[in-house]
Structures are given as structure tokens and as C-alpha cells.
Amino acid sequence: MKTFFKIEKQILYIALIIFFGSFLRGYNINFNDFWSDEMVSFYLSNPHIGFIDSINIIFKINLTVTFEIILKYFHLIFGYDIYVSRYLNLFLSTLSILYFYKLTKNNSSEKVAILAILLLSLNIFHIRYAVELRSYTLSFLMVIIFLNLIFKHGQVRQKINLIRSLKIIVVSILMLFSHAFTMLVPLSLNTFLFLKYIYQKKFTKGEFLIFTTNIITTAIFLFVYIQNITHTPSWISQIKFSFYTNYFFSNFFGSRLIGGIYLLVLIYLLCTLIKKIFKEMNIDFFFTILIFLTYTITIIYGYLVEPILIPRYIIFILIPVLFLICNLVFNIKSKILRFTILLILVLPTFINHFTENTFKQFYTKIYPSKPEIKKTFLYMKKMSLLNYSFVINDDNQLLLINNDPYKNYLEKYSLKISQNFKFINYKDEQNLPEDFWLIYITDVTDKPFIKPQKLNKYNVNGMKSFNKIEIYKLKKNES
Image (cartoon, rainbow, N blue to C red; front, side, top):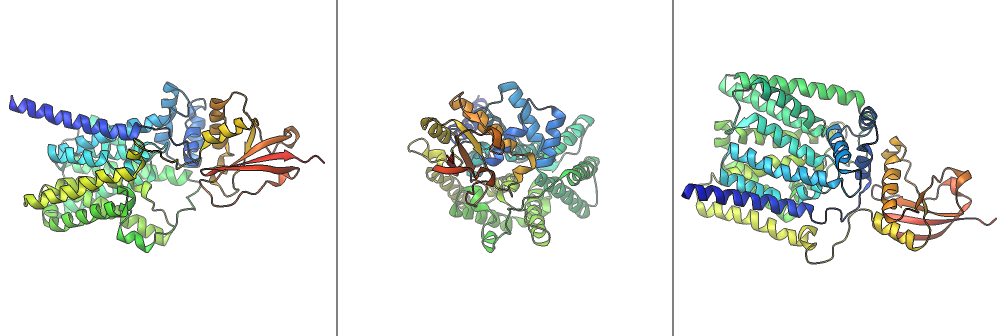
């Protein structure tokens, strides 16, 4: 009877944590309008575009095929609506917490798993991308699912049947095509298996199968990627010296102070228990390799070729960081030290939310961080001028698809405000009205607005600025 009530209590804790994490992510989910990258995802996932056409367009833009196709069918089921899209990422984010619990429990213990999902539920970085229409939440989930298929009781599964082999192949391909940086996971896994073979002088059938599968799926992905990639982000800057003092932990955990706490705790635990980690050659060792190779490879590539490292590209690094901290802290023999570490992890993480919109939205006014599209259209409607167009910089990579993402999103949004809004192409000089609005979104540029040469016959007759968006009222010269 006591065991039954203990299990019931554990289930209650887990359910409450997952519900709390989901609530933090889902409350006010559409408070911010889309920014430029989200507009691209919204456009690529249009269910009215044919499947092959969608694939071709996705390959031209970002190769996050898995996410865009899943989002496409999500829209097909629930409707192609700007207020519907982000609920997919809310679902994926909540599912990530559940699968992280499964991964941690199957490879450690119940108490470690509960602590791990508590920290993930409160993680400000994971929350931030759970409400953004991009592939990062999906890539995070796919990595967890992939690792669940590989590890059991802290070790690589020894018995892998045909069904599990097919699952690993499918999940691996979906993971790689959710974001290219997830390639670091099978690479780290093969490094782990190789080092384990060197140390133990044996390769089980399961390990050999996983090793070869990783090589094949990664090779297929690389071939497709190299054949189809058309550009690399030119806006990523070289990492600064300050990066080496926190390794993006300030981004991952909400502030430089909280990030510093997590980083120092992780370093302390790894240094203290490094002999145990090397001796056991288990999932802790793999996660240590994953952290090391993720940073090392991307940093070296950045110096030798071009910068590629930004926090959201390696969002999956939260998985090994949180797992190692939660698992290793319970290996500390001193109860006082263990309790102290747990306290300085959980309490500041929770308190930090009172400085973030996640908690502030419940008791005070919060401010948008993305272009205020709704407020813009409401203002345009108030001014009784419903003709509009938009302009972007010539160096914007969205030009690769002829500005369709902006046009698509703005038209969808304007119709929600008024059926009388009319989108016009300012380049179509013969059909331009006497006056109209020209929208300039500034979220991906720091360049000032310049009136296009094709509009020399028009004067700027007014301007209004909202958050990361400017609108200019153009009126045709009377002459």
C-alpha cells in the first residue's frame, strides 16, 4: 500500500511539473507577432502548396525539412492561421519534457528524472523557443527521442531488433533534417563507441549496428545538404573573448549570474567525478563527449572557415548539461553539499522568472520583442488608409524567394483586422493608388529606410514607428 501511494505521489509530481512547464509556454502564446524568420516558416508550411513544391522551396532556404513538413500537415488539420501555428511548438515542447523524463529515468533514477524535468520546465531558453515558429524545439525533441532509442540503464542497448533498427534510422534522418547541427549527436555517439572499444577491447552487435547506422545516415544527410545548400548565414559574427567565460550559459539560463551558477556547478561535478565517469563509460561519458565536441568542432570551424556558432543552433546542449548536473549531484556523498548545490540551482532559476516575461505577464504589463504587426494594421485602419505595400533591404536573404513570406503573412494578418485591406505591389507603377502605406520591418536589419527609386513620384507624407517596424505614408505628387 505504501508503495502504491509513493508511485501515485511521483505521478502527481511529474504531472504537475509538466503541466506547469506547458502553462508557462502556452500562456499568452501569441502575445508577440511573427518576426521575419517565423514568417518564412509560416510561408514554407502553407498546406495549399504542393508537397514537391514545398520540398523544393525548403531546400532553397534552410533545409529544416522535418519541421516545415510537420507544420504543413499541422496547418492542414487545424487550419492555416497565424494564431494556430505556434501551438505545434507548444505541443513539441511539452512532449520534450515528457521524453526527457523518460530518458533520465531509464538511465538514472526517479528523483534525478523529477529534478531534471523541473529544471527543463523552468528553463528560460527552452521556453523562449517553445513559442517561436522555428525548428529548434523540434530538433531538441528529436535528439531526446534518438537518445531514448540508443540508451537504457546508462548503457548502449545491447539487443537491437529490426523494428528498433528501423526506428533509429527514421528518427536519425528526421533529427538531422530538423537542423544540421544535430549531426554532432551521432558524431559524438560514434566517438563514444570508438573510445569505449579502445578501452574495453570489444564491440557488441548492438554497438556495431548503431555505429554503422550513424555513419550511413549522416553520410546521406551530408550528401543531400551539400548538394542543396545555397547559402550560409552571413550575419553570424565571430565569437568574442567573453564567450569563453560563459559558453552561452547566460543565454541558456536567463542571465549571466544564473548561467555562471550552472556552468560552475557542471565544471565542479565533472572535475570531482571524472574518474567515475571514465571508469564506468556510460551515458555520463557520452554526454561529456557531446558537450566537448559540440563546442570544439563549431569553434574551430568558425576560426578556420566562417563563424557558425550561435546559442539556438545548439539548443540540444541543454540535454547533456541538465542530465549531467542532475545525475552527478546525487553522487555527492555529503548531504549538506548536495542540498546546497540543489538549492543554488533551483531557487535562483525560479526567482529569475520574476524578471522575465514568463512570470511578469501574470502581474504587470509586458512589452513585445518582435514587430508589432497587429498594432500597425490597427493604426492604418484608424487612419482610414487601407492600401499597403512593403519594402526590404536588397541584402536580405528572404529575397531568394521573392519576398513571398512577408506578403503571405501580411495579407493573412491584414484580413484579420479588416476585409478591406488591400495589398499592392509598389513595383507595379501603372496600378498604384494615389496614396498608400509602405511597411518597413527592421527586425533583421540596422539599415535606415530608403524610399525605392520606383516611387520617385511619391512624397513621404507621414511616418509611424512601432516595435521593429516602420510605416511610411506615401502620397503621389500633384504635379
